[in-house]
Length: 431
Image (cartoon, rainbow, N blue to C red):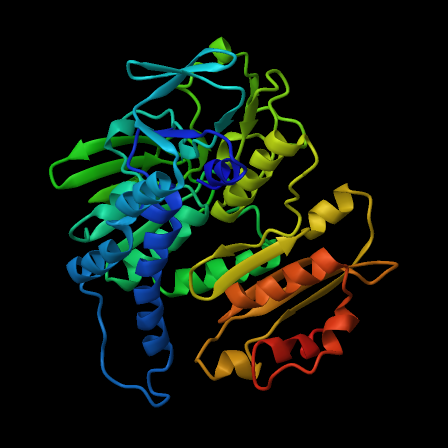
């Protein structure tokens, strides 16, 4: 959407197509509806954490009501998006698009030619390559289900599995995550990930590492999942959900016909989001082989790609200051470099790291686990990485993203007169 609007506002003639309802993954089947469900889980978690600390009584999630509430955020999106395109004078199409040539695509029975073609097709769950894969549900299925199964098993230990598992567990389901290697949430700080995993296990979520799934089979009362190095472990579930990663949604575009080169990560592009093999093609979001699989990244990519089409290649979107968050309890957030990335880059860093369950900001909400890992560059003291675990980590990480973007040091942040008592004031306690 961002790419098409940017080009249209420059006075260009623009067309857009999607084989699904307009709106994209984030607004209809991803971050927005997911966060609505997570909001309910947060209420349950807060009430539980404050039990015997002034709060009494039991709360529960009524799943059908929650799904109805979620739909107030998603159902109208395709309609409003199409209205926006019409108001802006953007031609809309529906159907599967594929390349016929370097500047030509086919949508159903229609053929369109253009000076530039923008690809923003997002991502889809990657193939698991296991027997019984047809029985595995997606995150789309989870977010749309009318009733909550009693037993849910998630394949893969990434963000999707952790967030949906947290929601399901707070809604009363028995939840298990199976991950093929020894490290879950590998894009996040391992010190804080270990604390988070221990916390979630204590809350009743089963998290098993070094447990690759070998097959899924239908059983009399659900599904039977075989896992382990030789498939020796058997797990029973009413629903099995794919959380083992997503891949660029480009398989059906017939990119060869368009002269668009790809590698194992996606469409190969130069720093300006332009295809290295077909300069008429620009790629935004998950379909390219460079960025992070996050909605704000796709939006920024889309604007940058359109401006590069219009003005010539001038904008290089950077991903260093894009925060990532795992919306569970406690929240896990990250921006910038991890310690292992600093070492690989030949830099030196000072590591500021501590568990902080005794801090006021954690204790006042009944949180028993929190912590931080802050990385500062050895010579300048600039903040180059920030990783937070705690109640308001999703908001606090934005402060550190801005600090990295502007070259601020930890001392700079600690000279601020932060509102008190707030999470921002906690920056003064980092050592």
